[in-house]
Image 1: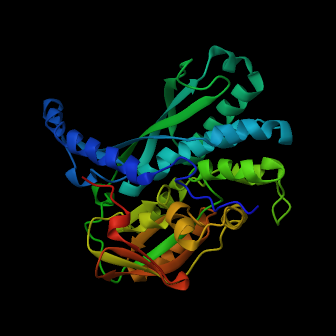
Image 2: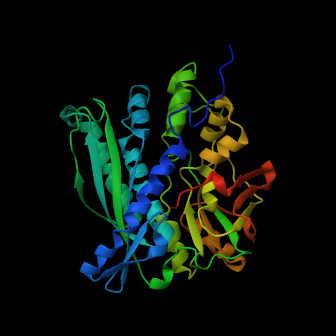
Length: 369
């Protein structure tokens, strides 16, 4: 019997419900900004609703963020008997990427990170190989991003986290220097180019859908895709660390008008800016094999795939057309492919993906109070 199509909601992730909490939290949080005055600090109000929060502390712009890995550790644990590797070195990179890739969207260079590793019990810490890989991978990602690892928290949360499992998260702080590097979309304008940066695979968004799909596959995570790789192995390809790209861009004298880390909500995230703009996409980057496999096996239509997954675009930069070539060159100098893939237009807030005849409208992305 043919199984029904899978989607992100059936995998347990309903953005509509989750985003309602985000909006309520923003409404409550806005009233706390008055407390900054006691510390001779002020908030940059336009950063509320963005991927990182910015505060002016004595003339220095400081950005901060906290993010979690999600369920990718469960894939790593399931793949270990198949691959013979813990994969905790690469999911450490994923965890850091979730934070620093958000931080750079506001123009901040990451300065430090802190780890939050919450295990289901103290028994988790008996596995020396897994711990060593986690530490090694965490430090390696810090070195790539040139950040200091300040410390962290390692609780054992029996009854909260499943036995044998761990919840990984990362907090990061960055500095926006010079202040002109602040990127909150004030200069976003019709005519700007949309430059997409390549994703390495699923990154850490959509993994719940991948896990649900694995339950259907004849050999689960060991199922071979068209390129010969095991599905579970491809799911664990580490997330691209985008700070080196932004640093190369700044070094070239290019400051984007706006940037977006394409994680939850897929390509709908391209209209994160609150202004009335149409984002017309004319070029599609190659879809990573693991995402093409998921789309086919889960029978996702284009709306569900591009509305939930990165589909090959892990980050987007909006900047003047005459700077697009320099941005692409900066990305490639940092080892990341990039494409001048679309244009910002005056008009209703929406994303138009011309090659797919697909439109996402403003009501399909509600992230702001």
